[in-house]
Length: 64
Image 1: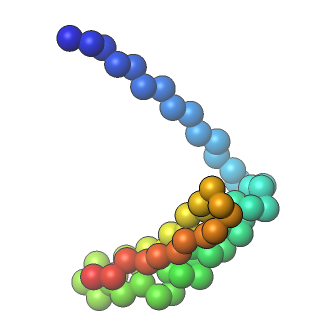
Image 2: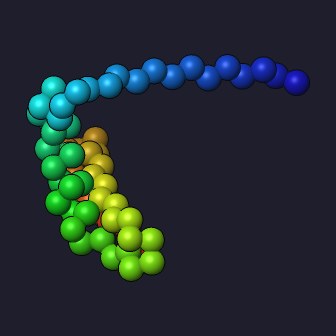
């Protein structure tokens, strides 16, 4: 048996303005695309934005 230890850390910001501009733009994209979510059952609208290595931003929202 092998023992695997996983360690993680996170940073907590008080306000979105504390984030780097690139991350602020991603957050804005995710919030905007959340308006396109279709969640008649859960009533929980989700928006997401992913920054690819080539600089392209992919957006999406939940569709129930």
